[in-house]
Image 1: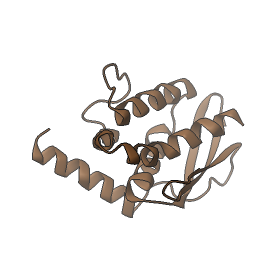
Image 2: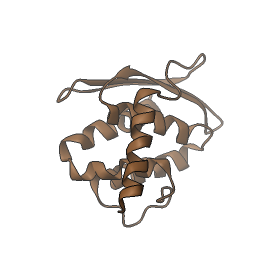
Image 3: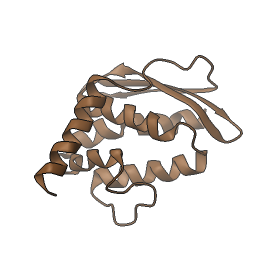
Image 4: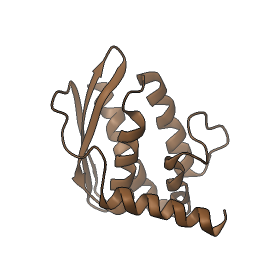
Length: 143
């Protein structure tokens, strides 16, 4: 990966970490879940409003490292307005991406802002930070 691209990805993570999108709680929601990473103390709470198999609204709150917050922020941007089936595919693709097995991604490519978190694979302890919001999302769907 060239240096310019690495710098861009780092800027995306820092931007979403400092100014997260969709931070707070959905005014109306019918699904929610809480996640906690005891290894580093990251915490996230998600609220979603799902109607007719579409994520009409999704927000998160909590605290954690820049990677955890950026991942939650990017996730909410990407999943809002999407069908649940697409969101489940994106969950799989994202977890594969940050674990380093991105051979068959169908919902994420190099132009996607989520790709900024690809470098997490080089830091195994940070994979849990990047996937906390995503696993919390999956738990919310079970509600």
